[in-house]
Image 1 (cartoon, rainbow, N blue to C red):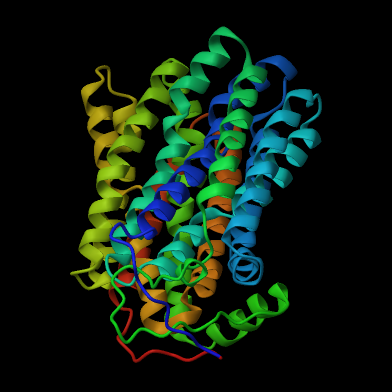
Image 2: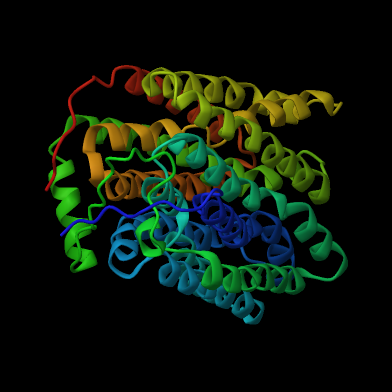
Length: 422
């Protein structure tokens, strides 16, 4: 049964929902970046190797991605508000409990499992779901803004966390992140709504002929796996999976996890390196919102190819910039990389929607899972490379080559009519 709600308000509540979603993504993002700052203090305090510490990050990244398609189905079943609130509580719990870690497996449980499930229950599929349900006009711009919130929150916490680690210890930094996640929960409970129809509205930009189609309800696991099985038969799905796996490897997995330790290897203080990653976050806001704006106007295939090629060039020169005796070159890299950090998300979400229709958010959840699988592999491999060779150079060059592959794959995605998975 379908209904057509009546619009009666001037200020569309979709923008309030988008703002709350933005804050929720920022609140959940902090601890995803924290391990890159906490690695060295933990290594010094407990004598754990870079490989052992990278394992906890790897579990986090894997669960962060693998939860995404199931989270999309859970949001359809239980609503945005319930899933988001529980996710933020899991993030806060994992961050707070990590201060009691005295063995590497305890970090795997807190950093990896609790925070991985919590952040994965929101992730970028949360942004895609909010935009899909609340916006028909400016949809990809909103995806860009929310994506920027997630990535920027991840990086903006770094200078504060680094200062706390330096002056108060890593335990205080963990508690800061826990508090940040908890502060957002009341906002989610009060202001976040599942769909405009719940308050008698239509999505932003909906025509007068708009008719609400209720989401498919049922077992979330069955829906997510069924969607995967049908999407796997479409070639475009695998092209998006390959490109986004490389995207994850070259952002969260490599730069997000190992840039600070690598810069420290070259004599840069942790606080300085953390500040540089925060600059990445600042320019990420510009780059990702601009990408959302462009996705409303430009073929997303062209955008993806350009973004991956641009990123590969940056990674290719990074080892030389880290070895430079003056700072402006590395700052230039940070600015360029920031503009490209997660600019790939809006065109990827757009292609999922273009090809798979209303199943787009769940399909994007599976594509995003590949992003985090790539990130997890890169986080572990880079740690092993560093332990075995004493430097990260091979990891940077390998990632640059993968970006070239992603650019070619993205450029060759064919146009096709919308695929119905139901």
